[in-house]
Length: 58
Image (cartoon, rainbow, N blue to C red; front, top):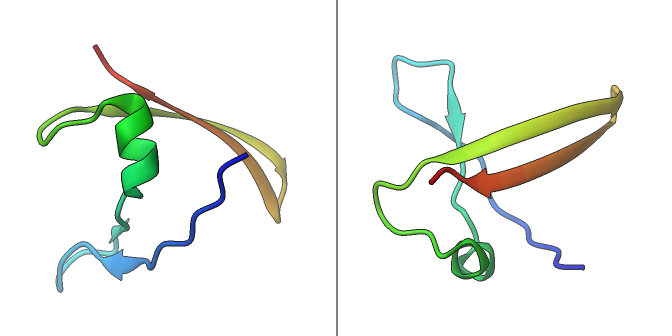
């Protein structure tokens, strides 16, 4: 299992959207390049736990 820690930032000063970086190890596994899209599938297990599957959109 791969574990990574990233910092969350505001997307911009006028937005409530947050953003974070994709760790290079994960980007390499998914073979991501600038401009690629990723799909987030999220299962809410409990208020404190999510199961997330991220895939590269072809």
